[in-house]
Amino acid sequence: MEPMDIVGKSKEDVSLPKATMFKIIKEMLPPDVRVARDTQDLLVECCVEFINLLSSEANEVCNREDKRTIAPEHVLKALEVLGFGEYIEDVYSAYEQHKLETLDSPKGVRYSGVEMTEEEAAAEQQRMFAEARARMNNGVAPQKEPEPDRGFAVPDRGFAVPDRGFDGVNADHV
Image 1 (cartoon, helix red, strand yellow):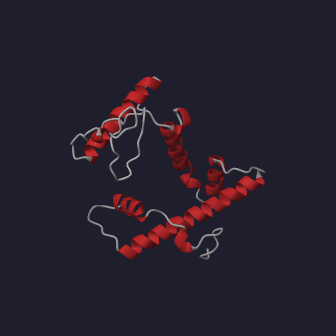
Image 2 (cartoon, one colour; image 1 turned 60 degrees about the vertical axis):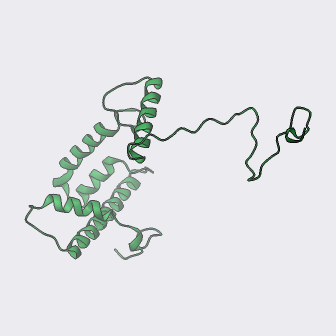
Image 3 (tube, rainbow, N blue to C red; image 1 turned 45 degrees about the vertical axis):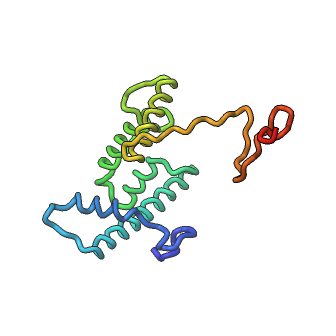
């Protein structure tokens, strides 16, 4: 595939997160095996190329079915068409596991199996915010600033306003 074969993108614009890819590569190999940086880069490029090939074929499968959205079934069929049929079972298992982990709860949000009322969720959210603020302040609780009087707000203009009495006369000169 040429550098501009991907619609509107140059080769440098289309990649995978290298740190994540390097971690995957490292996890797949025995601990005593080292991989040169240029080899890691080559493996990342191969992965990008494979994804491009697979998505392109899945798009063709989708078009043949007169569909506008590529579905998981189209990707599985593309694997078969491209000669990767031996991986279909593993890919399907990974897809099913992904569905269990992410799609069981409403709007794809993962819960730890605990149902909460809206009030409980709001209280938990506030507790987590407080914990995060404490961590950001190295465990020191921030001093809460007093709420401003909402009855009459005077913007701070950087100069003193003379104190006037009820009749409008300067209270300092009475």
